[in-house]
Amino acid sequence: MESTHHPSIKLDLQNLPTGPGVYLMKDPQGEVLYIGKAKNLRARVRSYFGPSGDTRYALRFLVPKIHSVETILTDTEKEAILLENTLIKKYKPRHNIRLADDKTYFSLRYDLREDYPKLTLVRKVQKDGARYFGPFASSAAVKETLRVLQRVFPLRSCPDSQFHHRSRPCLNHQIQKCLAPCCGFISKEQYADLARDVLLFLEGKNSELLRMLRERMNAASAALNFEEAARIRDQLQAIEQTLEKQKAAFYGETADQDVIAFYRQGNDWEFQVLFFRHGLLIGNKSYPFKGLDLPEEEALSAFLRQFYASDRIIPHEVLLPTALEDQPLLSEWLSEKKGAPVQVLAPQKGEKRRLVEMAGKNAEHAFKTRVSESEALDQTLRELQEKLHLPRPPHRIECFDISNLFGTLAVGSMVSFQDGKPDPGRYRHYKVLGPSFPDDYAMLYEVLKRRYQKVAEEPPAPDLLMVDGGKGQLHVALTVLRELGLKNLSAIGLAKDRETGSGKDRKSSPGSDKIYLPGRKDPLLLPSHSLALRYLQRIRDEAHRFAVTYHKKLRGKKGLKTMLGEIPGIGEVKRKALLSHFGHVEGIAKASMEELLQVKPLTSQDARRVFDFFHSPESPP
Image (tube, rainbow, N blue to C red):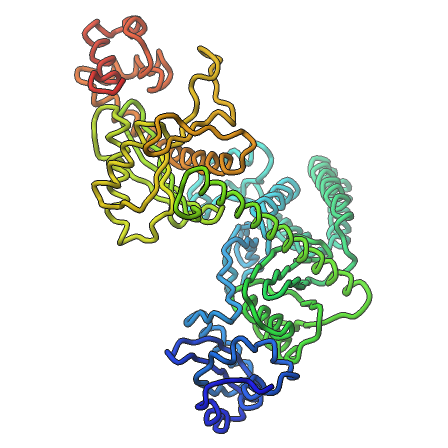
């Protein structure tokens, strides 16, 4: 069967150049559908339009959409790789693998050219002459590594601005995590020895490191410097304990390796990268793709080119599940980027093949977990649509919360969730401009009005607006939507049931939250095991956390002093007396008249002023 494509393609195919370069496939409207690189542009592009038996038959859904093919010649195929990555970022073709810049990677930066080097946690690897170690796929992993290194090797950790202006040792010296080079407690030569020890440890040269430390310990003992010998002995023991823990994670190879594999079902893929450094598995990362209609070899090659296009730590070896046509080119390209030889291998047996199979199993597990989570999310959104009587599943939900201290330093928060996941880029803080008394409704009205009067400027609008509160808060939200003419935006209130228990024992159980709906007198009660309720609670709790975090920031020392300074007749002496008696502003705000009268030197008139400041008669009951 011949491919059905636009007649003008024939002319394009006949006039294609035979050199290396990049090709852009476009639809009739000129939109770029697919971008690829090739050693021979004519041969590569023609392969898309061959008979059904051709290996490019996997692209049969793309080919009928192609109206024209544009080519850009380059001097070498390596230049084509760089140009391809640039154009993919620019045009974002729907049929290409597009790997977004991953900012979750952490690396350790170590520059031995400094007089007193230190380890620094960074996200971006630069060609600045420093050594970089990693990557660490999680902050927990890299913080654990730093904790171990600081315990074993007491390098300085302070920034340069503090280091050059410190006149006495900091707390890290007191707890034996730093040798205080800032105050001359260790010579430059001794610190250089320590810095080299750290490098040996990070490079995995542990036997050499242990040998050198034993020699230093024996030399210190022979010189009757028993305190130094004891310090080195403790360091040796700490290193040996750390290495003993690492043995279980050792995989036999000493070279740095990235092991890449994938799992696919139809056009849905899961790529998995395992990071091995000096034989230790230090992390992994999954990359899901949907609707990717490419042959496996081409998808794998494209993933590699996208993955290493950004600034990453490139290992000595990259292990793949299958051989690629451009494997030698990829090795040459990566070697140039690293400045040292890099091998791209597709092992067929042995330990390296076992590592590839391990990556494949991880890819399959990540894929099935993601599918399971997706099915659970679909069920949750369908339940929400049904129970809340929504016109459509609430894929995007925005939730609002207000945090204030008796009307002062009031802030509002908005969090946004898209398909079950937080969307931090759409989170918003609002510093409430009024009122001066504790009116939660007025504060919520202000925040909602500020958000939704700009909904056209800051799309997308949510499928569901949720407020933390009951009937009153929901009424405020509906009022704002009505005033702004946003009739199609659904809103609910989620409030804790304050009637569970009594007195100080009154608590809200996970299933006692009430959902308030427009036009319904009684709240909706969902069982505690309801996935829909748990999802709403998760969003509400995140909005509360986000509001409280911002409020605490504003409630710093300066903010608290400013608040007490607003009370008429309460000067510096009386403010200090109040804080000394109650401990904090919250205690003053909750105090009764009787408790305030016990504070000296407050008069009865002063106590009344303080009480009225935090208990305005204008506040709602």
